[in-house]
Image (cartoon, rainbow, N blue to C red; front, side, top):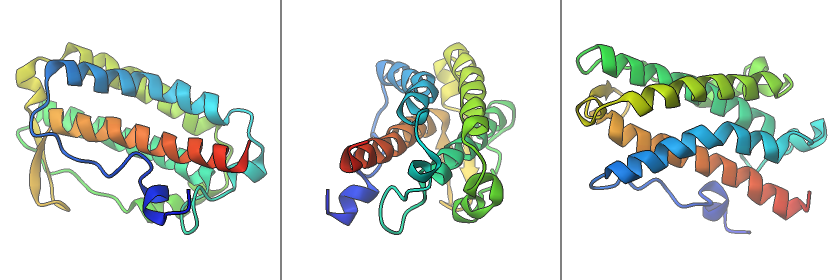
Length: 178
């Protein structure tokens, strides 16, 4: 895979669905449920050298990517809870690139991030399975995007985000024949 766009977006860019069915919601929840285990299975036997390989030129190291997913999932879960308990709360964006340069993303072993993902996703999925359609229409305001986003819409993005980064790792593994 030589094309930089393909390496950046191996499953394509996120395309917000016009409508999201209940079946799609169930599929997205399953993606979140399965993600920590799939990620662990992909990287659990990797060496530090492998984890410290960029998944593409100019991209993060795999170790940073795994820690990014833990950071992202924690933030997303909190955003869901805020939207469920407040009226269209304004969320706090964070600088993902700078977070990925902090030592807990850059050099720590991956086990804590995998454990975080496992715990956060278990709680998140448990909560998601209890939501009504009305609750899935709850929103938060994202100042960086200057718009309100429903939980249903954000769930679609979060599922894509998991698949997107898992594909980065899978393509690197295939490219390197690991």
